[in-house]
Image 1 (cartoon, rainbow, N blue to C red):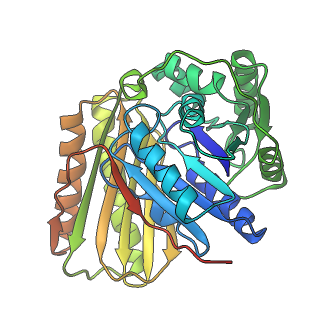
Image 2 (image 1 turned 120 degrees about the horizontal axis):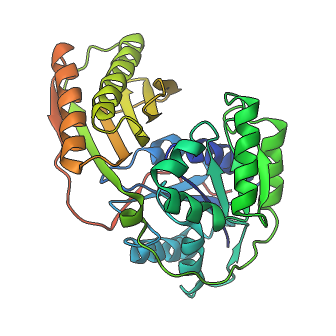
Image 3 (image 1 turned 60 degrees about the vertical axis):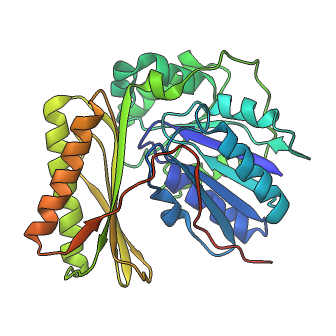
Length: 352
């Protein structure tokens, strides 16, 4: 069983990259499993990564490099025994330390275990702000990587990409730096796939750190079930976009330079609409995913730097509830269990 750890700060494009990599592996006949870690109580990216032939599991309510180590061990052991994957891709929460995750897995006693090079993805458009907001945290993520992927080069100015490449080389001169767009799936992205086939190199053990404390990130997630919904796809897109804009603007009043992410999804009968905002300056990004859904629901996951959790909770919930009332949509908030070891199977296993 080979483990691929693909990390990076909140909003760096991990889910999109993993989605492409897992499909390529599955198409090549590799039994592939994905472990998605969300800091909030509710998972959201597992739904996006859901695909026939790929087992997807979510670990929520914490970070697998510190507070959810036992849950990760149980999940890996269960996958090894029941699914027998060739490849396990781990998408840590954006505040995790990928090198620390590898160290924890190495001592779990799993049989025939190997590692791909540890990857940290970087959004060049926000890298300077990230280093300013939480310098020690970002520096640790970069230094623990064997491959540094400068993502989103299709939308970042060339001079920003060059400056980011220079800063990364100074922080970690031993790492291989790759530049690509996971969203486009360009030729450079294929280089990442090729390098992941190589064996990873064990790095010297580092002092264990609590990523949640160091990151200064507050997180909150919420789920609303909808008993009736008159949204058509275009109205759903507008709801997602306006809600994210309002949340962004309200958070910006507290921390004008915030980074992190706010992810919002709406399940309609024949599609899922997803949107996200990853910084104070970014416009909402919205996408449609064709999919039949039995349940109508809204999920929101937020993780933002330097904002009190009670303020974040109030902003996201009041915004969504006000927008739902304006749209004459009947809804009910789902109460969440307060724990740190929720494991949710959200994928489909298909025998080859």
